[in-house]
Image (cartoon, rainbow, N blue to C red):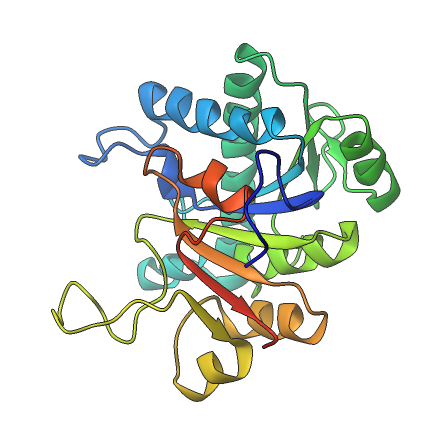
Length: 244
């Protein structure tokens, strides 16, 4: 973990947000307005610290492609539906961020010009250089790939210094802390050790892509106040997964 600073120790950051981040604990609404405002306020702190920020958002709060098979939906069709769900979330997040005064662009892997830009790497980088938050929607644009894979892919394409995996837990553990009270949290762990121990940091494709291209991953509790600022300032928050 880099040394702490009053500014972001990372120049360019890719934040992976799950669709469930939009839901309240009771899951009454797929997109809870109050939760959305809270998410936007946390993200705004990144701008204040001087980091360039891109976001990949999931769609599990609306529809998860893999689960569609259990209801008789073809996997290709289900995954396409899941990718559409990420676009809905991206537009909701864009609206919430812009109400916080954050200049934002949405780019989609599946072209839909009326509501968002198509993903073009050079254009995305230019937006980041101008201080805009770029939200990547539509996953990779292909079925059978998760939004974890999309996050790893986009992080590589834009030259991100780190991939932040926002979760509801405070890092990576030796075992499930909800089931095993003796589970221990790692403050840092190498990619190879995480693989050898079978720790599920991200899906295999995403994990391999980050390892091969030397993009560290920080797994942290996004919902704990001040955490995202602490991560960006180089403090020991969550778990750092790296080529150590």
